[in-house]
Image 1 (tube, helix red, strand yellow):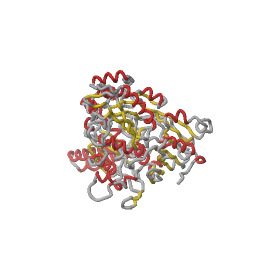
Image 2 (cartoon, one colour):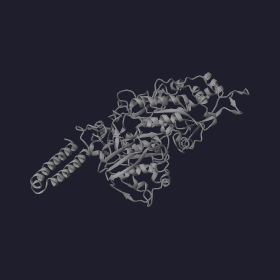
Image 3 (spheres, helix red, strand yellow):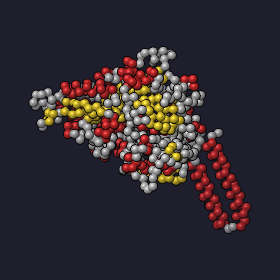
Image 4 (tube, helix red, strand yellow):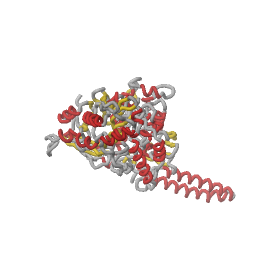
Length: 622
């Protein structure tokens, strides 16, 4: 019998006892001593007390066997069934990255590397079921409920969840056994909503989140200003933020100080299964399993003891390190997948390595800075798309390991409109559109011009993606066929982020990671076009798009939502603020030491559930 079931039985028994003894008292004493009015008054009071008790019992978490409301948490803890109960604990997993990161603060640094680290060091209120991504199960929240109007979420936290122990790198004060409370969730939201905090992308998602009201140490309410179709996933995705790290000073919170606290922003203090040990810039980042992790008693402690992330800039060197056993996992390029992983290391029953692929929730794109006069014309942007031979790039660069796309939603969801046909590669159609926009070769030098200016721009890219080195010269060559001069500028990842964030580029090639449900607001709403560091870096402004975004954000009808998303998809296809390129597959090479590799799960195999047999475990070298 579950503990919640037992609690409800006891509570019900107590309620029945109150009713019985209350009635006995009234009938044996009050009826003898009091008037009819007094008896009626006492009965009304007793009924009121019973009604309050009923409300209190109803508010308690229900057991999975008795829960009937879809908006309540029912499982004891998320995804426990995916952890192997026979797993051996211990060992390591060394992953790799091609680029260095700026800092470790995921609120002001939305790089995927940092997000993945926080994902290992933090837990959220709830977690999506690995097999059914539309279902949420409890994590830091023991239970929750939502009001009928979907504007108020009431959260009941687990007790005994601890922050990671750490020593403040500035004050040198030691913090141990500090409990996670409702105040930490309020602090997280307040920091993001602070206008001085450099977290514009996150703030757009919380635009309609009004506030958090702390009711007690373990209970709080989340209030939304208006209905928002992602309010459930946003609310249950909330994490706490350690005030004792980021606000370790007297006086009110200072957003600018938070941004510029470079020393504290080099560490991570979370409450999840792994704790931060150290980060050597340009070298290794190390995490180790948190031995006080609350999830251990529920059977969701990750078996692997140490996780490391090494910075190795070149993919060739990464593959060499994987073959030699220095690292345990890496992402492969399409060429490596096809041509470099066919030897004995990857083939045969005794091969030490394996490779696997799955649909990555991301896409690649070319974005056109619409603040530049040349790209403020839809005909020019559409012509640019006609000059990108995506079929050839997928075939020759990605070796068929990518799918062409036409819009912003993940291709494997119903929100993506598969009826939209991609613009074909056609130099002739591109020339026609450019001529309609007034671009002609008036001086016979082979380059189009207009009002005395050549049709010339610079494509900005980061130098950490070898596929770009192959793609961009191909695109440059095809652009030239239409009289367009495309220069290529490849820079370090940190410089790329700075230039894009400050909107100092003509066109850029990059990628976006995607959620299950997509809110176009962050990337496409006009209000974000002129915000520094916002994700609408191309400066897209469109009243019809804004109207559709507003409708999407308040739509809870799944059929209607799909139609609205299809309308938005069609609008973007017409306007071409991006040349949507393709959705590549995630290509991974990994040591065969790791067991419980679930390739059948729609979100890709979760690393938390992996384990290594004792005899095959490795330790980390200094």
